[in-house]
Image (cartoon, rainbow, N blue to C red; front, side, top):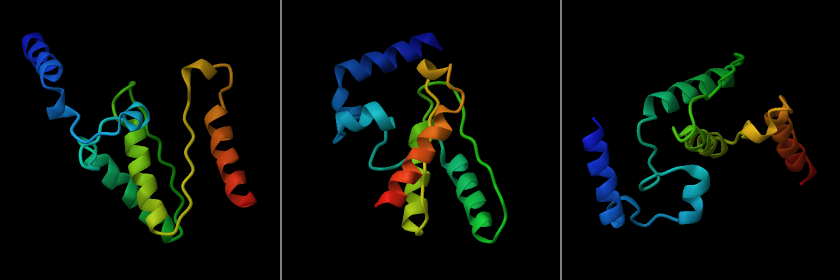
Amino acid sequence: DMSEMRDDLQLMLDKPSIYLHDQDMGLLSTAGLQIGGTVFGRNAELSTIKEAYRRTMSGDSELVTIYGHSGTGKSTLAHEFGKHVLVNGGIFLLGKFDQRQQGKPFSALASAFNQYCGILMQ
């Protein structure tokens, strides 16, 4: 309920060290809140994506989309999965739709393709 939310927010203001212990504030603005490198509340989704990736290694084709409201951990989930891909010798490309780019419906795909071209140029 609202009073619990208000109390939690007040606690965050009064004792920020509880919530932001050893956090890189620059990282928080782009990757979401992670504590100790752990993604909270997205373990089921991360497992599902990793399983889809495992199936592709056997020759299957898969498409995974991550969607949801702002601030729900989509980027954090994608970056966490990207670490898994890179550790296993894969190439991870990330395309992100930006509300300011609504007139460019393929901007996320173009961004991912540009990343891939950059990898090829190295």
